[in-house]
Length: 380
Image (cartoon, rainbow, N blue to C red):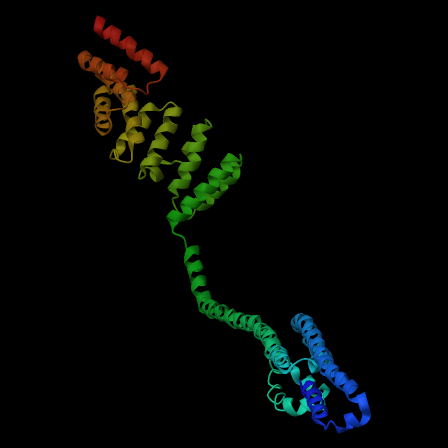
């Protein structure tokens, strides 16, 4: 615009000059007038073309500058002075928009014409402010990295500080607990005679299953030197009776030592019965009759042996006592029927046989015996 104003002023000055020289020179005045008219037109056209070209270049370079700033902020600073050449030819409002968009317009000052420097001189003064703008963009990128990196380090330090803490208390606790556990172990080692007897009985059973009867006998003999060991004694005697060695079983069941224990009396009676001493077996069982609770097997054996010994009345009493605890045992009804029939109580015996036949649990031989006895009693 300044060039256009200068050109217009020059044209006006030429037109305002006196016409005397024109008359003095003849027709020479008309030629300069036409030339002076073309000069402003050409100047206007040149300025218009320059402004259009500058605007187009600025529009293209503006898009390139934005991408360049995102990828490499350093390259954007180098591209700004190249575009400033087009800004010189452009009008002032165009340069202002470019300055507002570009982050680094300070490079425009040295390349502008001497006429525009005076006008644009105050403008670059506030323009250095956008220079720190790219810096905060890069700083937050680096700051979270530096802040995130020590986080796991701190976590590791905290974990290391917290892990050894629970480890120390158990150490302090384990130190005083040591003597206590030792005392508990000492207490456990001090077994009672009953617990020792049960433990040895299990060991004897294991040895007898393996066929190591001699070792079992030696172990029991060692234990008997210290105590009566009724459980271990019964374990060995029971196995000997099953194996058909009642004489050896009797050797481990002497009367003075077994009469106080119901289970040992029962084993001694069986051993005597196996050797043919029915009277001795009945005498052992009858010597001390235990209560029904917990000694059912003892009372059943006593009732059976009494019946075999011909003592039907006492046998019937034993069977009746057993049926009071459980009247669903068919075999016990059969025993009661046999004892009653032996006493001549056929009607009562028939009722006992009928009750036995109505209950489950009889073996085939007993079932046949009951049916046969019922037929005879009903026929008689």
